[in-house]
Length: 70
Image (cartoon, rainbow, N blue to C red):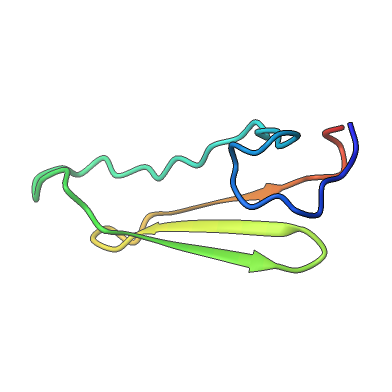
């Protein structure tokens, strides 16, 4: 597979989905399950993603590794 510099959408030819997900634990649902989640993405030598439940302040984070998925 060759790199395509003209990719615009995730559905374009040659685009691959990387495995991964992020889960924010929010066990206290006394105020309901419709919550606001703040998502921050940090672009450095690797990509870090942080999700925070704004009601409970529970936080989860993950790193996206593009180098090990060929």
